[in-house]
Image (cartoon, rainbow, N blue to C red):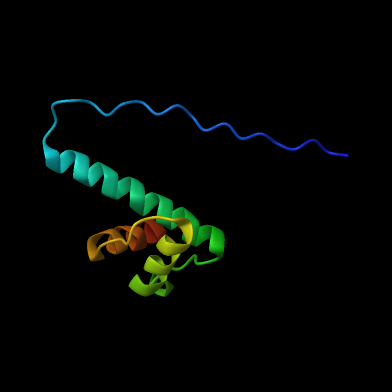
Length: 84
């Protein structure tokens, strides 16, 4: 009988202080796009052309991520395209 694997989340480092607000916004947008791209890949969507805004937003709802903007959806498609 195999033992259950225990997954430990890595400790998060605090973001550097003193940067402009735009930096934090773009950083968080990139992280969100990366999480969504990974979820899409896990679900079998490997092609950027098949990753429509609707499909990306549906995946966000499934994974508990807030609704992504059009810019975030574009970033997800670019991550899928560049990952080839």
